[in-house]
Amino acid sequence: MVLIEAENDISSLNTQLLVNYVFTDEVSSLSISEITPDFDPIIREITESSEFKAKDGTISIVHNNVGSGIKRALLLGMGDKKNLDPEKTRNLTGKVVNKAKELGISEFVLIPFKNMDKEHLSAMVEGIKLSDYSFNNYKRDEDRNDLNQVRILIRNDMKNSQKIIQRSVVVSDAVIFTRNISNLPPNDCSPEVLATLSKKLSENQKVKVRVIEKEEMISYGFEGILAVGKGSASSPKLIVLEYSGSTKNRPIVIVGKAVTFDTGGISIKPPEKMEEMKFDKCGGCNVLGIMKAVSDLGLDTNVIGIIPAVENMPSGTSYRPGDIIKMYNRKTVEVLNTDAEGRIILGDALSFAVKTFAPKAIIDMATLTGAAIIALGTNVAALVGNDDDLVTKILEYSNQTGEKIWQLPLFEEYKEQLKSSNADMKNIGGRSAGAITAAAFLSNFVEDTPWVHLDIAGTAWTQEGTKEKSYNPKGATGFGIRTMVKYISSGNAG
Ligand code: BES
Ligand code: MN
Ligand code: ZN
Image (cartoon, rainbow, N blue to C red; front, side, top):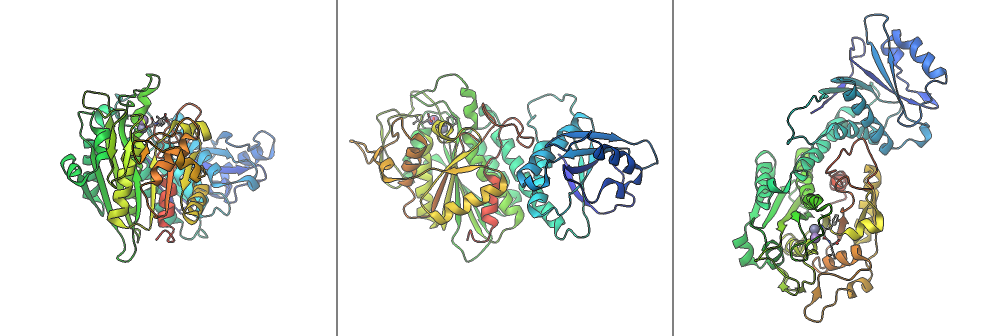
């Protein structure tokens, strides 16, 4: 894993590779020549000729054999400075990591560009950390080139940069922590394993964990979670994580769907790409990462994480189409499709959250519907909420993190699609507006609590149609964690 450090010793700086951002209209201010005069003529020749146009993401490696200093520099094209935004910095900085690995370089030094603000500095760190990630727990060691260290050159006028770097490292590590769990194969990640990992997390963090086991769930009436989990040999768990950073405020609750494998149950899915349904636990895994970040940052808020964890399997003990379930809040649900299982376990978790914690706000994250992908594709998550203020905030933070989110409406008409003649509601709302009717189902379990639902079906892992980004290597992305941590740490989250 790459270690990131701030470096301010320019005089005796040495490195295998010195990385410099170049814009079409500006070579970075603390130019390489200030650090290593030997490079000056070489860089000037390249940037002043038309050889290096500094187009987005273009990379040029420059060698220098004069003197005893740094022997190699990398120029990273960033396009026009006026088109700069943090997402570009994140993505293109990540490209440098991939290039360095390709070259077998284990360490480099990065020079921030002129007037780099907090957002770009964070994005730079995230770009490095997150693109360095790969999931290879299950592969024998190949000839992999590991990146060991990246130093960021900090100038005296960059106040607080040390702190910002540190914070971004913590958040990125939380994303990586989540990716490592989300990427686990379903045979190694049962609800029980998630419970164990949660307990392990709480050993090192200021997080308390409580796992509600099947027997307890029966006595409390979590019939939704129990029904979905019935068909599996692994019993369901309801994991509750608690972080107390304040004595005053009502908590924010983050709920995440963790279906460790979704076969569809009796309404079984077709075999194509079924293996991807190991990622149906990503919402829940995100919750673990968020709790880790919140605790590592020592935020002065109260945050509760709730993870209903089940495996959705077909068997002689499975729940069936036609079953009527009495949910935790005593509303009844007629099951018409056992593949619409996420909303059922979330329904129980949401009403448990409302009743137990009287939250200030609830956010749930779930790989809930294929319809969210039909509506928005695989690069944008769908948001549905019942509170304009909360919705606005989440959308605003998503703009800053590059985690694209788009709101869908929650009109009364959609709720009507869930009417059942046999129960309070049915668990599917027909073909039209599937992502919204799924959210409409959830709205039955949050009462008046300000609530936002994020359908991350398209964005939780890289899949067909996912735009390639250096910092999202193949597999789970941890999409949503950075936006949530920003929201929670914003202070106006409560
Ligand atoms: N986990 C799936 C949703 C999903 C599908 C996520 C593909 C990512 C990629 C969910 O449990 C599901 O099966 N939903 C059904 C609902 C339908 C039966 C109303 C779906 O989307 O097809
Ligand atoms: Mn399903
Ligand atoms: Zn599912």
